[in-house]
Image 1 (spheres, rainbow, N blue to C red):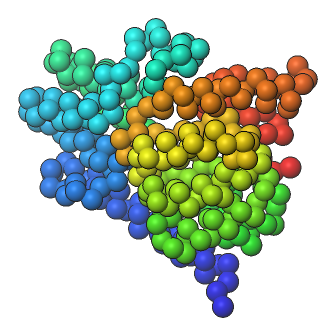
Image 2 (tube, rainbow, N blue to C red):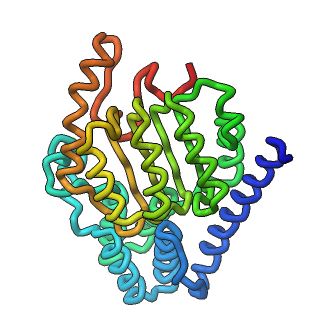
Length: 310
């Protein structure tokens, strides 16, 4: 019979292996020798950024611009509005499409502008910023997060009254991991914030998890950064939101760095935003607690809805 320490060691090995793979990708990018066919979306973005940076250093500007055009096409970066429009959240909500990674789009435009004007030194900052946006946490950050959150097994999670679940770099394509995650979601009814980041989740796996997620009565925020999801999952989420018995409290979903999911349709955004006034009136009757739209988009909730244990 396996004990909790064995489970933790196995999970740590998964984390270390996957993170080393990402470092290998970033290292090989500089030599343009990495095979890109099987890279996950966030891995391929890192590959492109590192490749662009290397090409600029070598002054192979036409090749760098070609790679940059590929990155822009992948992210639909031409959708980015004017910079003055970027911070005006009400206007963002009225657009036909809500751009999931506006900050990344702006960095891409800064990179393009500097490259076109041959200001090579000014290309370093946007390249560095894009790497930080898309790269996995370091090994130390992952292990610290794991030890702090105590979320490796269902038995460990039940030790506390949890409101937040965050999984980093846990391969949920593995049947054992998927089963454990599903059991956790079905058993922890008080969850208000769930983040499954860099977990290699595809549409089929997400379909399984949605059966549990949609039934969480108090879930406010769902973060799915760095997976392998497509617009199929976006459409499925929109269908779920139209049913009263699914996601009754959900206020926002985020899906940056997935597979060709660069925007949310206006209908999905409206379905979520229309819930905000009702939820705020019901749960924040006192003026002592404030909640801005930006707080909701970034998953920040006022106490006792901030994801901390009671």
